[in-house]
Each structure stands twice: as C-alpha cells, then as structure tokens.
Length: 419
Image (cartoon, rainbow, N blue to C red; front, top):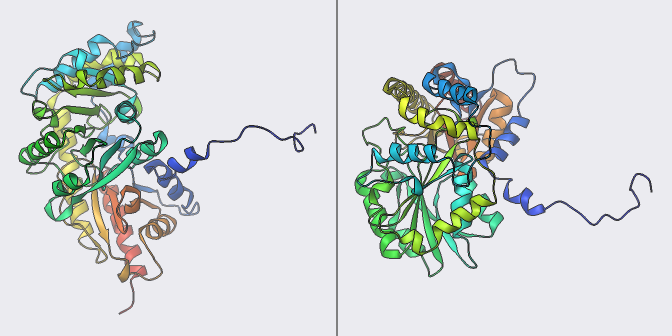
C-alpha cells in the first residue's frame, strides 16, 4: 500500500494533449533527433526548423542586443505587463507596420503576445464557437491544426498550387466555405513553400474573403524576408476590403526566436472586428494567458527604430545565397525535385520520388533513415500536409548547407534502385 501499487487513483493524463501535439514540427523533429546515430562523429546538419540563430553569420543586430541590455539595466521593466502590452511597445509596432500601410494603425490595434505561437492561440481561440470551422493552407504550419484539434475548432484545407508558385487555390476556398466558416489563414512569405505572394494575388484573396464574409488571418512572421523578384506586401494593405488580423513577431527578421515577442494586429479601418466582438475576445484571451517578458517589451521601441538597414540587407543576402545553393544542390539529386526556387522565408518544399529508392516507403521513412545514416535532419512533408514531400530549411550557414545537401545526395545514391 505504501508505494500506491494497490491504490486506485482518480487522476490520469489528458490523452488529447498527447495526440494533438504529436504532429507538430517540434514533435516530429524530436523523433528524428532520437533516431540520430550517437556514434557518428560528424556534426548534425539541422535542415528541419527555421532557427538559424546558432550560426554566427545570422547573429542578431547589435542594436537589438543593446536595446535588451539598456532595458534590463534601466530597472524600469521588472513589473507585470498590462494585458495588451506596454503602450510604448504597442505604439512602436504600430509605427513600424505603418511604414507599409496606406492608413495608420494606432496602439489600440496592437496586442503583444508571447511569440507568434501565442498570437495564433489568441485569434483561433477568439474565433471558436460551437460548429465553427476555419480554412487552412495545405501545405502549411502544423501548429494551426494541432491547436484547432485541442480547442475543438473544425479545420478544412485548401491547396496551395506548386505549379503557380504556391498560390492559394481560390476556387477551392469558395467551394469549402459554409455558413459556419469564420476565417482563412494565409502565410506570407510562405512557410513551408518559400513563396512570396504578389500584390495582385493578395488583393484577390481579400476580395474572395470579403465576398464570402470571412476574416483573413495573415501569418506574417517571415515579413520582409523576401529576396526574389516579388516584393513583400503585407496583407493589411487590403484591410479596407476585408478585416485582416496580422500575426507577427521579431523572431525571424531579427533571428531571435528565443526572445518570444510577437503580436496580433487588427487591420480593420471599417471597424468590423469591434462590432463582431473579436477585439473583446482577443482581450479576454490575453487576460487569462501569460504575457511577453516585460523587459523585451521595454526594448522593443529601440529594436524597431534603431536597427540599421545594413543588418537587414546582410540577412537577405545570406538567405538569397542559401536559397541558390539549396535549389542548385537539390537539382543534382534525381529522386528530389523543387518546382520553384524560394523567394522568401527560410524553407523550400521539394517532391520526393520514392519509386526511385530501394527500401524507403515514404517521406517519414526517408527522413528517419537520413537522420540515422547521415546525421541530417529534414522535416517530412506529411508533417505539413503533403505526403512524399520534404520541407528543407536553407537558413543555416552556407557551407553547412552545402555539406548537408551533399550528404543527402550520397544517401539517395546509396539507396537508389539498381537499373
């Protein structure tokens, strides 16, 4: 009895949490890391997630580091945060985003969050009501599906079209919508596709959503990381056509995902989100959830205002070089194809032809064996909604990217079917 072996306990773990979190990016990457060969002396090449902060060439701006030090040493930010965030930080985000908008946001349009993940939680939870459904892109960012499952929000998927540069299939969107559809999500620049949408395509998305009476959730965590021929345009530009809720953070542009500072921003000059109680719902969610670190908020105005253009340009130049390396190296591997060179973000989607390989059944099998044999981590396409594809991160040190893709090429040659 002492050790409880004969006692019937009335508690047990929530099994829904284990199932809803099992196919997040983090969950899949953890499985691959567990499959690494600990006896391989070579360094592991991380082509699976979008966090290049470990590489010296991707070090954040000195102005950002100085802003953090100044905020901490000021001793002004050791207190709890207000629900929506510190007013100077919210004002700084509004002014930062206003540079690219045809109308002016105010601090009241900005809600600070604990990274972009909490921003996703805030808007999806605010939209949840009995029977509601939301439209998500395929391929996409799997956290949306995991969270929707956790809060019992129904999900429908529309396809992104690889032959059209991963544009949204707007005919599919129109066919999916019913009386319970509340919103559609777009991710631009694209995760996992490396796409950057044209102004014309974004306007068509806005007009389609307006005609259907649904909200557009614009995941712009990779904002301004565009290095191809298509310039980045924020979805908020079209806020006068359809209400837009923008999700963003400093994680990607400043290469500081561990600082956990994001935002939910409402681009809605017509005031529709206020009338439909979405604004109050976001506030209600934030009232019962954790706040972003106060001293990071205190540093935010300096980060957004003082970071020099040469830092942004340096990051773009490295990403462009990496994208070129990734696209060219993938072209050397017969069983893997990339339909379009990435133009933004940190990822590329490549199609895997398992019929050319011996002893490999699908994309999950491929990445597990690749991790074990070559110490290279790549995300299987099934994790982002596309079986027998791969999501390859190119945002790492260029020389390490070359080595990783050379190892992948060797792996494919070793497993190629004999002709």
